[in-house]
Image 1 (cartoon, rainbow, N blue to C red):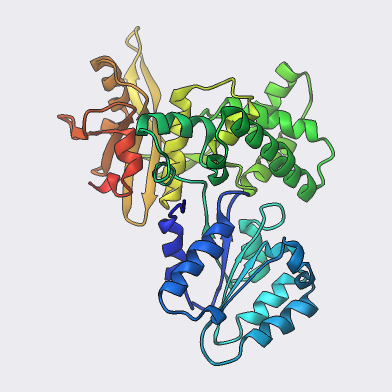
Image 2 (image 1 turned 60 degrees about the vertical axis):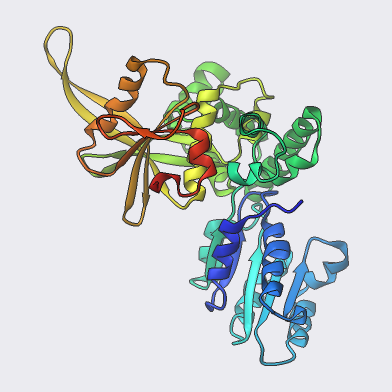
Length: 417
């Protein structure tokens, strides 16, 4: 059964013939090759592009291993370009190609060649696109399946689907495994043998156990404010190990560069400035996060917050943690300054949304607690509380939208409605 990935397909189609190398990036097994060789190719054919004008090579297959030599590949590609029509060159796992930067830069100099590539997160990251192609690369970041994409092929109810999505994540291959035991084994093997091994190999890390223990700590604290200094102190007090904050900072950078985790900075809403530390970290895929903890720590509140963060990112928003400072009085009548938090401040061009994640709103007191920071933003941007169960989207008397998580996740335009 075909999974539609229209968001990314449209981004590729919008970039056709723009003179740049379209670079599809993202974590391993998130569907980059499927997007390029199945969906994009199918779309080109449906528009009337001749099959002979689509040249695709996957460098990680046995039959194509000879093409990893640029002296073999480049002449072969030139031979395929037999007329003045537009040719689409699709290259998968391009990091396996020797001197790939020179080859790709040579291809885009041909007026009738449009180049699309995917790369492994082991040796081909977002920053590599910037440095290697020097203004000639156009990145399309692919995420694991969104909940809407997941539900498009899920046979059960949205409630059952959400529980499974929260537990096993959105890597497309998960749907190939019928039992919980198989899903768990796949995720744990993928994390250990692929993602972590990629990082260890790319950065020549000598102490793998330190790296893995840090990942354990981050897995246990998704959505919690932290920084390298605090994490270093945790290692000393809990793990009885001395790891410098600089080493931890590098390790976190490696996790982020490899698309395993992502970060949200703190933003002073009224002061309109960023606060450097502490930071919140979220996992790009909840299944991998849960696998790291052997599926032991399954807090639905934090998991829902992580899923909301990922959904906002894949919709193209810049996502920060909002901070609002308020003058208040304590029990003694003395003036105190309190910091209130907004889970997500989301920006895209001129659009901004303030969003709180509240797994449940059992009573008026809980609703008032969630609303408090939203009522103090001092501007007129839309304010939203997302909750697990809401009868239908509705506004409170002070203009805050209450929306159920399913309405938010299953409707790409839910924030604008």
